Image (cartoon, rainbow, N blue to C red; front, side, top):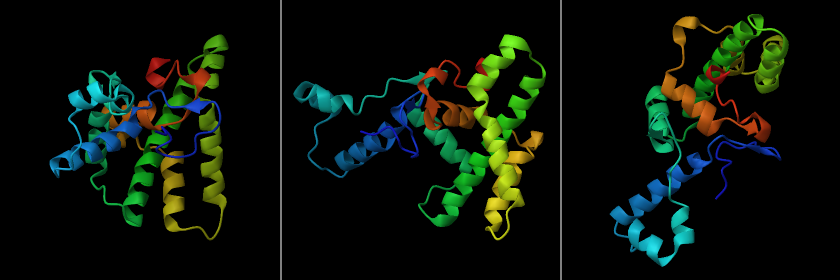
Length: 192
């Protein structure tokens, strides 16, 4: 199974947790069993073929919640899950809000640390400078769709009153966002 659910993983990149890919796989398996497809239950599957059964095991958790639980928290926050272009744009808007929050927090932390702490913060979260640069370029561009400008503004001008719910923040940080393997020590800015 590929853990690259959201696409775009480069060589030597991974997510802090690879279990997001197992959420829909397990849901499909459970749906098929409810529809009376003759799949074995998980106990029987594990006895019959432990390797195949291992695809469905979700052991990773953050603060006592599984990848499935965080996926459900995120879906609730977004409010829509139908596979339509409009809902995709809604997901992108939520992602831009999250990026804006991370950029905002990064800038505050960066101003308040120095020396090796600043170097460490920059090594882990310095990629947000590129996010800001890209948002600036979108805002200066002409002829783009309105949603592109809106997303760039959400990244650039974070509204403190619209903080991302903690569960959605963990979902993005730990289950969805790409990190180079050396960055895995700090999956959130709060861990700095």
